[in-house]
Length: 433
Image (cartoon, rainbow, N blue to C red; front, side, top):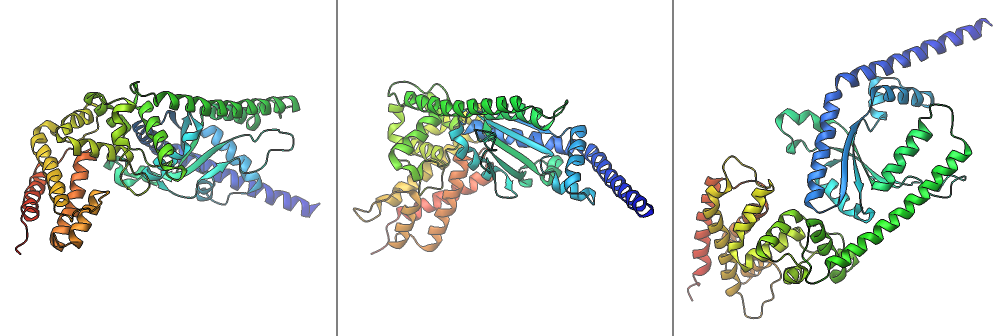
């Protein structure tokens, strides 16, 4: 009896210590709650901007763990894997801050994956659900989603928000239907207020899950129906979502399944430009889509189309600039109009330089991209190594001016324009025989 009493006393001291660790963790979490809330809000905003820009139809939300529910969760998890420190709890609870992407069309997960990979620091391989076969009593697979654990990129945060880059954020991506079902299932099955669920309740949840999976199939069919509508030649693209669907559908149809998921880019900007130019129909924009290369190009599909529009008519840089300003796509202290003439002169000059190079290439040379023009010109001795590197640098600057969301710096633009004019003289002067 004496020995048993000692063991019981020891067990109680261990339990009290663990409860103390949990309370200390909750107290620290409460003190740092604003940090987690701010990180989740920023992740929400960045996801919303990226996915809206790319024409992905979805609802983005965020949340931070409720302290009372978090404490109950820690107590439950402590029973199977006792905590020995506050840090061990922080390491164990991975979703203190979270963001959720609820997709209208489940087939767009790949596009969301690319946006998340590009925008955030990925901490570990993504986790896909379901991971196992259905429970023996269930007919359907249950929760279907993809989870990411990420950090915000410190370089993209304001000085006041730099600490948020230390916060681990979980991003959950699923269909709108699946997210709704998971909320119901989670609150009923994992947080029962009056005992465990009955067999009948579990069967009904499973039945609802089957309806959700059927609903996702219907959503995919709805997406295909919308895609067929956007391919109708004379119908204008009503929204940038329609334009994005049309571009993706075109790539899938013409370049095969291996090129079916390229990065689309800022479709909202392109849609605005096409509307201003009277080209916002499948027929009108088809010549520019025909020049797309989803497999070899590093540029987004939108950037390729915008470059083709400017290459055909440099004056189109004006509606491009006005659209970017209208949707808040150009940031900077001064209005873009204050440097617009110099900006247009540089883009015009770059086009002229590219055409000069092409005109001096051997007859019959096939060129599929601007970088290839420079490579061939160097190989043929038309330009020397110094000019070769200068052209590569100015191409990078040109792409930044056309596709960046920041207003060009006046002094930098002046220097680039001077360098460009010097190169035009070099390229335009035939070598002495």
